[in-house]
Length: 378
Image 1: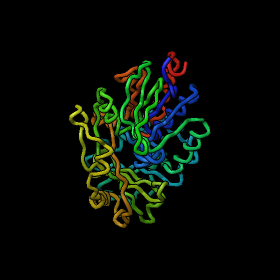
Image 2: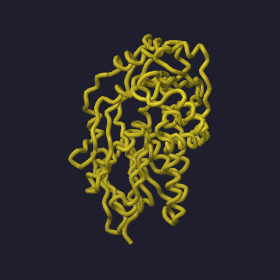
Image 3: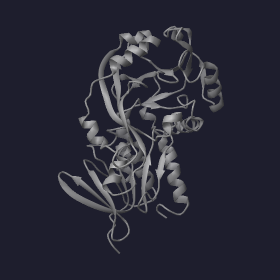
Image 4: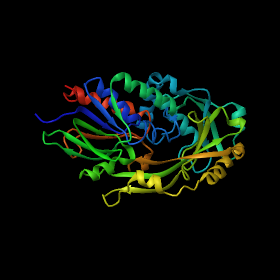
């Protein structure tokens, strides 16, 4: 009959990998996560703006906006202990170079039924009126990635999902029994496990696993990105701001560090490359480790304070660095669709990519559809 160690194996312990594993464990007996870091939620699930989107960010992609509107209440309901609602969130529309004007933004929010109201005068006065056309109070939250990690570790333990950390997956092959054999390195030793289903949820490392396995790569754009962590002045301490839509910026609470993030569309990406052919692909983990890290914070704050002058009194504390991965088509309309590639070069080998934390629900919906079609634990 051949060897089968697990019914399903998930590569990657970010929010996507953990959510996939927990879903699978409800329908299968033995599920394993292999994570390359020392714990879960260490990489892209931690290093981001910590924003729980509610659609406002995507006036050029109605579908992404609508999915955010559906998914935000699900995420808030499922992870209430991780949600920071202690601040007010404002969106400001720039007078020049913005891809939307105030009238268009208001019509867009009405269309997706996103709560929107004019900001009070005290908030409007924080902005330079000659550069900002309008300011609106919205309903958007932040999440605490450290608490999210603790909660997911407890769920994995209580749910019976096995987790192995510090495991670097080297390749995925078809086994002699026509199942999937996953090879990995841990503590200098080579190991392998066999599973019926394997899910590649490694975000920026998706193509590295495919290359090592001799499988077709997925066209992706990879960015070496910086999110600055700052202490904002007291006037901004309990608010989050996004100036949009185009080459602008956001500053939001980052609960896991008790600071604010500052990110800028022009300066957060330091450089990028396209995974088009195997020759173009770089090892994202190695690149993250070795790339020079000279902060773009001075450029970020210099531009941002033109719109929000009090930002000049911010104090730079640190930077978070990560490889940001997006589907090339997202460059056109800022959309954040999921990638859900079933049978990618091998039967029952699935590659998954989500660009926002609430994408987990779109992914879980895909898994449920698959199960109802007669697969996944039937």
